[in-house]
Length: 97
Image (tube, rainbow, N blue to C red):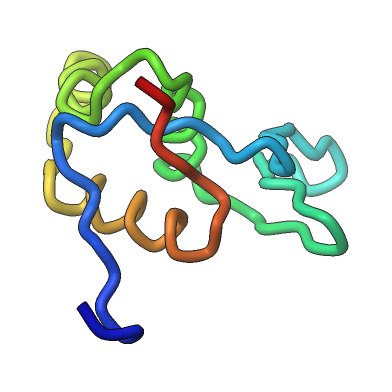
């Protein structure tokens, strides 16, 4: 695998926020944000809903199923692409074990 290829998040992965990242609600913006050292990432409602379920215990498939119970349509591939981008940015990591 070359440096431009990043591994895709699979449905069996158990994602969690990286230790240096915090999910918070910003009252001034009225939006959820990811707080990283020296950076804040503003999330839309879909992104916040996904990340709230990334606890290291649920698989991606379980996260998609939970979101599907809350909302009408939750494309599995879009959830995996979102998480893959955050893994590449080191905001999300797979849980150990």
